[in-house]
Image 1 (cartoon, helix red, strand yellow):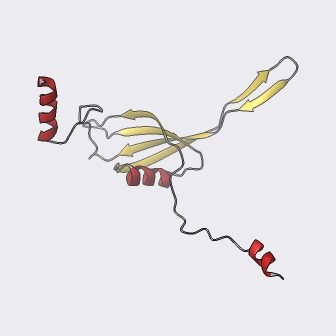
Image 2 (cartoon, one colour):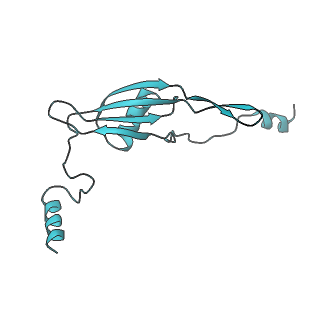
Image 3 (cartoon, helix red, strand yellow):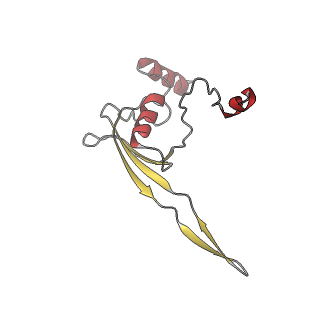
Length: 132
C-alpha cells in the first residue's frame, strides 16, 4: 500500500478532547425552600441527557447543591396539517422533564434578583442608594 492511502485511512489526531456542555436546559418552574421542604426546580432537557449529567452540570457550572434528580420522558405531539390537496404529518421533538431537589443549605435570601453584596456591605449599599 502507498503512504497516501494509509494516511487517508488513518484516524485523524483529535487532540485533547474535553466535554463542553452544549445541551440546553430550560427552566420551567422553581420553588423556594421552606422550613419543611427543600428548594426544587424543573428543567426541560434533551432526551439523551442523563440524570448524572444534569447533576454534574448544575454542581460544576453553577455551584448548586443538588441532592436528587428525577426525570420523565415525553413524546412529542403528533399533528396532521391539512392543505388544499394533501395532508402533511408533523411531529414536535421529544423532550425530557427533569425534577431537581436541592440541599437544605440553599435558602431563599428574600431579595429576589437584586443582591448587591453579602453581609453588611450589601445593606450599606442599599441604604446609600435609598438615601441618595
